[in-house]
Length: 74
Image 1 (cartoon, rainbow, N blue to C red):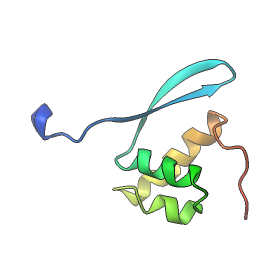
Image 2 (spheres, rainbow, N blue to C red):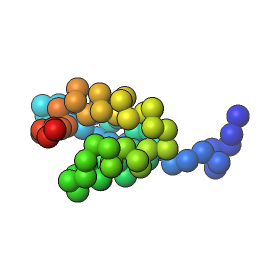
Image 3 (spheres, rainbow, N blue to C red):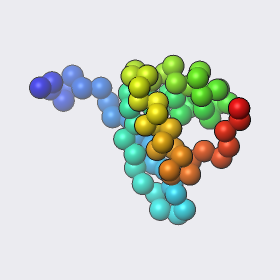
Image 4 (cartoon, rainbow, N blue to C red):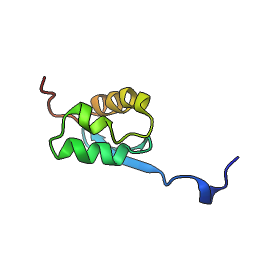
């Protein structure tokens, strides 16, 4: 088991579905992914910031269920 000093810092997004703020633990690189989305990057470009590419589906699910995405352009 790794010591706390060796663990990467936790990345958390506080999302509000309605008026209730709720913290969500993000995967490593999740904060950079959200920043890329806010900057107008595509989903594919934003996903490159994730340390584990398989985590993108879970992150996208979290954002959708929290109502954190206004629109998805195809």
